[in-house]
Amino acid sequence: MMNRLKLNSNPHAKAESAVSDIMRQVIYALTPATLFGICVYGWSALFLFIITVAASVGCEAFCLRLARKPVKPSLQDMSAVLTGWLIAMTLPPHAPWWIGVVGAALAIIIGKHVYGGLGQNLFNPAMLARVGLLIAFPVEMTTWVASYPWFSPELPSFLESLKITFVGIDNIDVVSGATLLGHVKTELSQNHLLPQSIDGLFTIADLWLGATRGSLGEGCQPLLLLGAFWLLHKEIIRWHIPVSLLATVLILSSAFYSYDSTHYLSPLLHLGSGGLILTAFFIATDYVTSPNAVLGQIIFGIGCGILIFVIRTWGAYPEGAGFAVLLMNSVTPLIDHYIRPRIYGRDHKGKPLEVVD
Amino acid sequence: MFFSETYRKITRDGLWDNNIVFSQNLALCPLLAVTGTATNGLGMGLATLVVMIASNGVISVTRQLIPNEVRIPVFVLLIASLVTIVDMVMNAWLHELYKVLGLFIPLIVTNCAILGRAESFASRNELKQSLWDGLMMGLGFTIALVALGAAREILAAGTLFANASLLLGSAFSFMEMTIIPNYKGFLLTALPPGGFIMLGFIIAGKRLIDAKRAAIAKAKTKVDVLPADVEPLVNTTA
Image 1 (cartoon, rainbow over the protein chains, first blue to last red):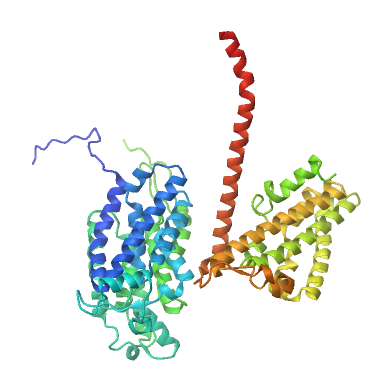
Image 2 (tube, rainbow over the protein chains, first blue to last red; image 1 turned 45 degrees about the vertical axis):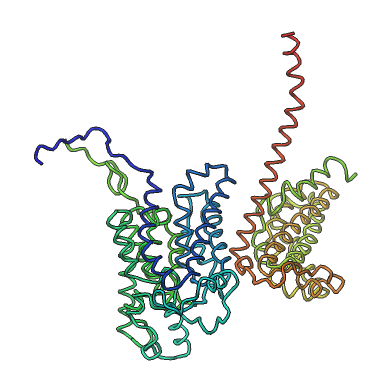
């Protein structure tokens, strides 16, 4: 070991195509949670997932052709696949097929290529699509069906699932219900107190293990965390945004919960519900739409956390992760303007360092 | 007279080349606010059209009398008087439309497109040309409002010119159409962000057409020029 040869002069490190490698790692990280979601929500979740990813690749190819850019290399960087994947994770698993298509078109065409393509967009395309869909189709985007244990007979069969995705759900009022956050919002608006109104309906264990209504990606928080640790281990993402985001939500919800537990959700339910984990690790950490410098990233995370808590607690919508990320995306250029990463050989203000002999 | 080159240029400018919305990007506030439906767009466009013709005419006639230093306030006062007249007329005879457009009628005063035409055209040209310019710019604005309103209405509700008879009189009921029956509605396009997105797509479309036309025109001139260039070469080699 002592005699190991060190070659310092030339750049011997060989880099794969950076973009496609990063995208592939994120897709690996999302796979376990996605598979789990498909298992508990059935075939229709798989159909919607395939449709969304395919539509987003199709839109990407269409835009690239329109802009006369090379189609094949840009498609091979997997960014369109990942965007479609993330949209599918945020959709209700039994949504009709055209929700996936419209979402993919919103994300790829308006969210990405209108700004000039990969790396140019101001807003996170997947979140733009989700928020656009939520505003445009409130009914379809808030129809949640129950999840079932793996391969249980209650799950819709293959043919029934085809019908759900391409025609619609028959007995919608029988199978649908509110998510935890939606339920809490309704109960509080009717002046019911919290611990009783969610007693027996939602438990922390259920939420964390995916035995609840929600979007495809809300399924199983531990599997999302597993993916997140994979990304951290691979140094695809850094810890600053997720940790500051989750810590902000945790601190705020703990403070309000300890002040009045009848009107504010417990911090554990906050962390385990909705798209918080998915947002913190997979959405907010998007390179393009988050600040560059470490301090800027922490500010970004704290801002997202505050907005998520405020929208969940006092806003009109039950879940605020999408809105929070988009709002913080819009201040990212401002954060980047004031807080810049230190450039090699210069101090934080951009002045050259003194040369020490 | 109206087919002379001057008037044809004014017409082209107003309707397409220098369109208030699609080229100058002016008057976006009333544009986005009232173009939820094609009918509202049409009403607002016609009101603006009337004000624009009148203001161009008045300002063109009085342009010799207005001292250059105070021209802008005088223009604004003149436009404000005209808008007040239109406001009262609409309230009296087109009350339903007036109720929908409401606040935006008085705000025609601050419509920068009208002041812009007064400053850049009417104060420098004679009466007939100024009136024609007002008509064409106003028509171009109306077309823009109706086009955007129609695009947003079709996508948001699946109808076209809904309530036109209610607003413009029963003679206009033939305009009310249902384009897509049993449509669920793409609510986003009815909201302001949808208006911006649709406007962006329409402007992109116009620029695409302009680029195509420029390319065709360029190709034409090249073809015209080529034979003259080629012939001497052929002769020398022969």
